[in-house]
Length: 149
Image 1 (spheres, rainbow, N blue to C red):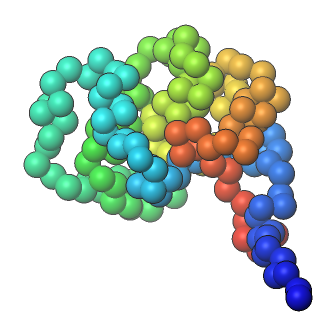
Image 2 (cartoon, rainbow, N blue to C red):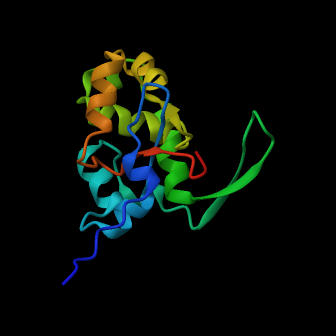
């Protein structure tokens, strides 16, 4: 009697490096038992939640580097605006995982390498990499691997 062997994708075998890009996988939030909006409201001093209810579902954003226009959820846009206006030292006084999460939100979830992240949160790049690339997924922060490579 033969036992089938588990299939492992190429991405599962790759190990993130200091140059690997990371982003927030919003699908992780949808599949988890956590709610992103509730999580953020419970941790931040945003004030009245109704202030974020803009009556608009999506906002058009233009990438200043490429000129590409993409639509983002109005809540995601509000969070990006909120986090991008925080004082520079805010992320330095947060836990490492929170700092990375807030930085990615402020950066419109544009993928960033562990090196880029470490310089913005003023933490050792090796510690950043080890923390966000381990087997446990924190706040949906995941590496991005090219499927072809």
